[in-house]
Amino acid sequence: VALSEENSSKMRVIRVGTRKSQLARIQTDNVVAMLKTLYPGLQFEIIAMSTTGDKILDTALSKIGEKSLFTKELEYALERNEVDLVVHSLKDVPTVLPPGFTIGAICKRENPCDAVVFHPKFVGKTLETLPERSTVGTSSLRRVAQLQKKFPHLEFKSIRGNLNTRLRKLDELQEFSAIVLAVAGLQRLGWQNRVGQILHPEECMYAVGQGALAVEVRAKDQYILDLVGVLHDPETLLRCIAERAFLRHLEGGCSVPVAVHTMMKDGQLYLTGGVWSLDGSDSMQETMQAAIHSPQEDDGPEDDPQLVGITAHNIPRGAQLAAENLGISLASLLLNKGAKNILDVARQLNDAH
Image (tube, rainbow, N blue to C red; front, side):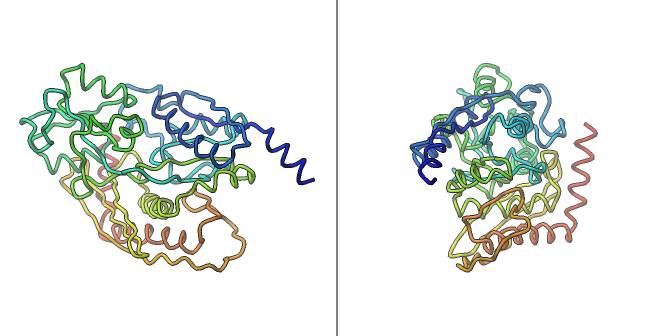
């Protein structure tokens, strides 16, 4: 039996869904390449599709008010069994997934920070040294809130489109002096040379899950869950569980400025989280840490194996729960100190615009 089973699994083609943008394709190719190395006997087919987020390009993301903008169509394909797994940027994946879906793998994170790319005539500058009233393009409320406060001499304006489109707008229109993008995306596209300045967490904390790739699968598809589960990077997983739990407990999404910074050191997980008013004038941030022990004993079967939408059977459950708890504790601390008021005002202002 084992032999015939092995042969039939060799015959099965694993279908992988992706968005059509160049970055999405590269990210998907990266994950498929890792899987091919691990499973040389399997065949993979990549299926590209457009999503709502790719089609609505004239509206700021925070205004569209749909958390699953870039994931929904891909989830339909998963649900209809047209694809077996989908690769996303983790920061695009809502902290609550629709029933029947789960994140089966979170790959090793690239640099999670933001980068500034300058117009050719400002190469060599930094945000600090840009001329008075220069326009900086970003469609992220999180970036604007943090940077406006630090660089009051700059003006911030929404810029949409995939990375190729944004870089073209920067270079060809005389509208922007610089744009802010995730370092990871620029690195994956091979455009490191355009990075004029990296914004460290002291200057601009990053989005929840930024820089990490997530593989979404059907929650009940044990074969595929086992297949992709080996891609989990333990440190990235625990950091992202803490970050996602923090965001979920704050009830933040695209429409409010929430940012984080995490690190693992000597068995301790450190989480810094912050919330901002839209213009950055009002803000609140705190740091907490938790010991992440990796007890070897098995905790037995779980009723709900998912934590913040993630399934990781091969990583100690206790460590995952400690990470989730850290995120919830930090969110509670901020909420107790009045963060809810800042977020509510930000949400109302954003809705009103």
